[in-house]
Length: 390
Ligand code: F3S
Image 1 (cartoon, protein in one colour):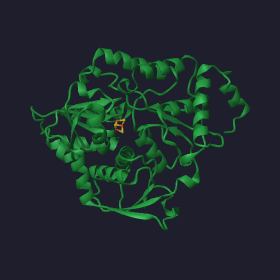
Image 2 (cartoon, helix red, strand yellow):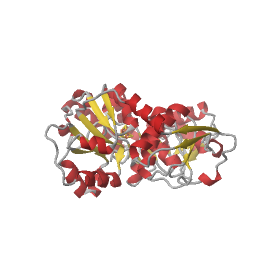
Image 3 (cartoon, protein in one colour):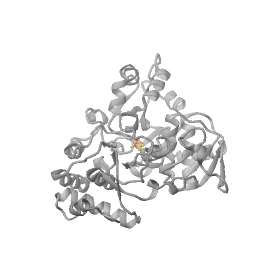
Image 4 (spheres, helix red, strand yellow):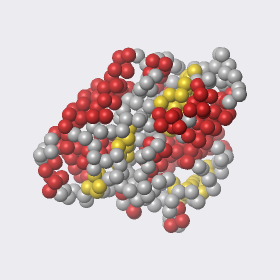
């Protein structure tokens, strides 16, 4: 990969250890993926935040990077292992909380915005069409590639951090026009409902792996698109998709000769069955990806005026701190039924310490709950899950 004189100097350590480490990583990625050069990015989004997932090794690495380097583009952060303000309410131990705060502290020193959310595109970090960016978090980067039509590869946490420090990323993969075209057509017959979109994403991800699907017959809004993106990235490794009549540039895609796959209610029912392994949840966790302002309003309107059943399981409504501050009335309603939890989610929080069976409407969460959180899982729609609380 071609490097400019300034990039060579950074690689040689002339700008300090943090820049050198970051350049080494970008140069290695460029070599592996045969990139021709580095290109400037306009933003980054980092994963690798929860102490549960990165442990002491990750924390030490961040502390070292924070000693002499800072990000040089707007950079946001994925969910951490706890609500940074009300972690005690979540049953998180003081030991975990201390370690988690040290990680957030390092990111703060690096100049990263520490509102931890997987939907930063709803709250200020929304790349413009055509922007090159370096985003980790599979659901968010797929949304950015597909719905916002900006360009990012499927970055890991360290690669995205390196790009944020240098302000550049290797030019390969989804940064190139030829790798952004659809490779398979999905003819979907599903209800216009958020859990149906999540299950559709799951079924498609399992079938197509890393392909670029082109959906026909569906009209998801931004909430349907975010949950579909998350499920496809978790069940497969889809990092970009097109939806006819919805995502930018769908009219100019070449579909001739592509394989067609039909997905309908039978496939969705099978996906739901396969994801369900439990019966009696002790936690109902909504908001994977984090609840949008629109979803907060919808959930609050579904619960307003109703009474919580005293024997109902604990409930978490996971959202970003920004969305929570935008929704004071809705938060007050939802807090009568559970906790509006910010900065974290049911997967990266250490829920296994206090819970055994979790119910959610997110196929992505259902995919990860057994392996990452030792949970039995109940997969169902918002109305069914809310009924369990009443
Ligand atoms: Fe976000 Fe956690 Fe789901 S990071 S996409 S809520 S697994």
